[in-house]
Image (cartoon, rainbow over all chains, first blue to last red):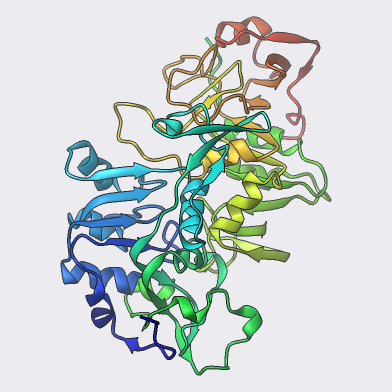
Length: 229
Length: 226
């Protein structure tokens, strides 16, 4: 089914209703920057569990997607760094949650490959380390590469700056991070934004995510984290 | 035993020494901790382009007013100099793996004579994840290790072979500690400079790796104007 041309602007509570038990959910953000805090709060409040969380890091227990981990909502986390949120490591070591870690560049490229229709890619990162365990290592031009596979999700929660009603998005500063890439790699994409404007009001040269990728728009909330990001 | 130096002095000394390594116009990525300080010691008049793996290039001094939309890889607020820009993580790691970053500076737990380093996980402790370190050391054209010469317990960190899970194999070009500077080239480690507080014998006693001493062993550069 094609996506709607004009995207609904919903409350975060309405928007996250599409996330079901057991879904894989990508969440944008690097450290505390560019996280869709209003959406992660709404998903936390909704109580949906058995999620596979795909986020670069799991930030802190008390905010963003870190709450989903600390609240026991995730059966699995796929990330590159989870050191700030000690609960992530604890749940993993207690056998209560799966944890899959990738080098950050590999992690984002897996998502890019997922969104770009690639069957995988070859990277030199991790050769000779535990990262290559269980993976194919191929030699190209005398150099070793690890075959890494694509990553997609049921839903992506992303943070952009401005949206038009067609779902075209612009980003600002280092909030960009994983957000535009994740927008390409999930069946349903929900964007949290500072502002929604009329179609034609965004400079086409500045649109970094095409509206055809986006399903729903949510205005950022007024929590401390959401409002300042 | 190595002499005990003030912690602040140690950090500044290492950062300042590494800051001498870059050429005009080079693109450099700095890790967290001591490496972050390197930016403060770039010689006057030299222009280095700093990159952060979360998606920024042309990073300048920290801003006067916090801006949560503008952070560096260590989570500190950053500013951009004129000509700088922001980009997504896939572009950022394309720059890194693609060989467009000249140098990276990072701390480590262990480094060995093959140029392997281990800086992301101590088995038995909770696994924090490798973040961007593995891509940076594989992708950057030169890798600088900035670290104290020995552990807090006095054990060598420059080893014959790393014991911890590796970050990468054979990638380190230079090791800078508070007491010594080593280069690693073609699988050969060379001690090129030592600090005035120590003797070559003390360095030998506190370094497990096999290394040669440069024919003209230099005094640790950058100390004269501290």
